[in-house]
Length: 269
Image 1 (cartoon, rainbow, N blue to C red):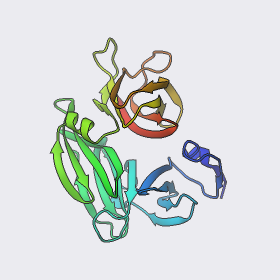
Image 2: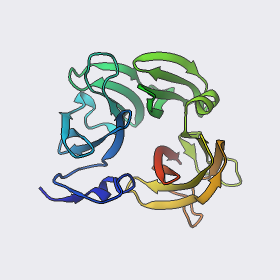
Image 3: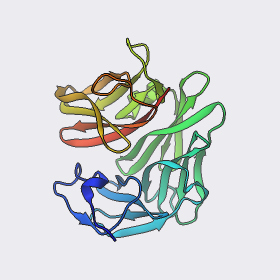
């Protein structure tokens, strides 16, 4: 198998050095926290997904059944979500151009949480990861009639804790999100999207926009100090030259004191 540089897997921003891994990956591999202070690398190899420890020891191989070819975003994996010591994966599937979110047990194939799109709603996951020893994720519903998010569903270790509106969602749990999402390119501040992030302490911030090929399209914040609290940055969907970007998925990366968090957004035309 060909050697592929870990930098191509977006790991250069996480590890202080570059290694090579004997694997060929199709699609994008990403690091996820699988437990407090632990990270997994998840990549799609051929027609299967593989999970690796930080030292590249293989943890598991799995597929996503009927959704295997429809996955648009793999949010994360964790052990354990519901008490059976199995690994669950949280992902979004693009089914006929619409977006649904699923939580699947990779051992049994059972769907444990499902929010399916219809003609009225699409679903996205904006907040996921560990809070203390509990895995937290938030699924937001995009109302196609209102062109906005009307409700979010918060889960903690397998238990739905609440349904909340988008504003509360962003202020309570989310450290990085944008709204509206999807959004339409616009000028003069009458469209576009607002990227919101929350800081626990005063920090150096860099905020950049990338396309799905991990190519930089725009830098919104360049190494500035922001105080503790919630901050917002408006982006109208243009590139670094001020030209409108084409429709599609874009990734915004927030670097806080050298550590990177990322999320995605969708531009519609």
